[in-house]
Length: 209
Image (cartoon, rainbow, N blue to C red):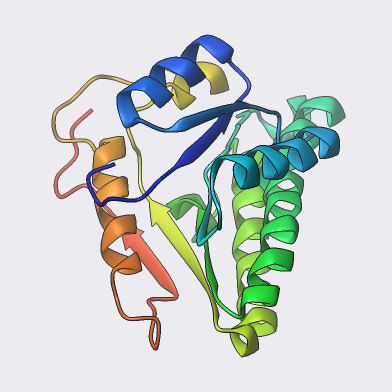
């Protein structure tokens, strides 16, 4: 990695996972954050690969966009399973380690969807409001252990998320890229541990459809 950090990444799609790991020089771990057995194995593999753990980035996300009258329970619960329960399970295991060490960092990649609601956003937007709430709870709980908990809210980012969520995203050079978010995550982590930026919202300057 550019910052000299050793990184492990997880994902459900093995092909995409290994491609990303090769590009990032990261350790790939095939795992589903909604599966507790996978999470336990993930941390075992992390500690086999690395002597320590300093940072958890919760970046897994899924979305479904439907009118309230068309929303089905299975779709709604699937979004919460990844965006909320998965984030909690990953953070729970990281926090155990961080508390023992009396330091650590948890970064929840959220969304500007956590700032206001939107039509057809019942599942996705509600899950991001929930992630915001959990972040505030963890921050209040873990600060006494010198653990910094961050919330990062990007606006629209050009990724494969849109296609998976069932809507069309137009390619446009004015929209945010994943590397823009990575740049800001790196920036907030580089501050001395005596302080931190609790929340960061990132907008594209002048996005065009």
